[in-house]
Length: 118
Image (cartoon, rainbow, N blue to C red):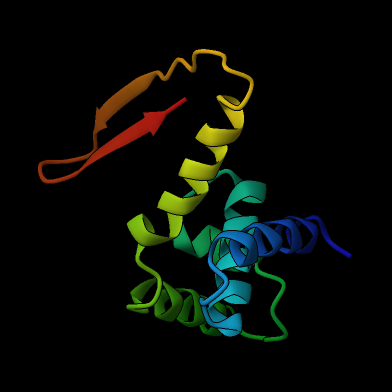
């Protein structure tokens, strides 16, 4: 089993825990995309498509698969991340310790910004 598939299996397990009502196909596809992103350390869709362990012979079909997933209205980034972030923060603070968060905002063009929470 490849590293992307192993990562995807773990991401899928976490998604099923925090989103029990999310469709199985959405969970598996999103987990594959996240696994590829973790493995490739890039948000570039062309590079991610190369890492996807899909049974297709043509590169353009992998890219199309990824674009369709990203356009799916069931995959709302804020809705997917929020329960996971809440669970991790609760776990970090479960022993009564103070949790320190570090925020870093970087502008990505005229209309977008990236916020990293550590």
